[in-house]
Image 1: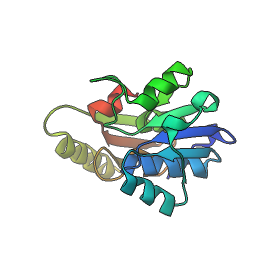
Image 2: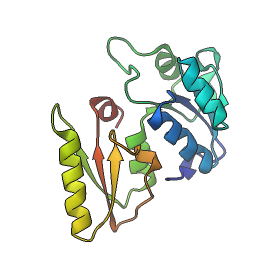
Image 3: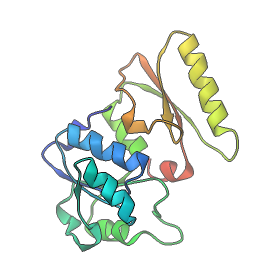
Length: 173
């Protein structure tokens, strides 16, 4: 897992507690951030609480002191309209970030291959990852398939991230 130490000692809001959101919250926690997490789905909130997250209704919170709002893929950033918490963060001048952006910031020396599109993303991502591994390169494969980006191992200049990236993730990068 990548530890997001750039947010150490700061409050970060995480909206969405699916696989990517939970991975982001864990990475932020391991890096020393104070995470306030929320999901509109009660069962996702319960999973977050079971994992020791501070589950806080972000729509009823003052986000002005947050260092960032980390938005899970699929939660509306723009279309058809921003999620109310996104609008609240923007109004408070809080940056809205995604997991791919956070991974790139945490591992700036690594190389990235991002695969996106309508059809064939998973197959293409897996094939590129297989080629990199077969070539003897230190490679982590994930993103929108399998392992969330922030649950992958931290890589340096000798590593390559091969990521399937959704349009939602691209919008936040």
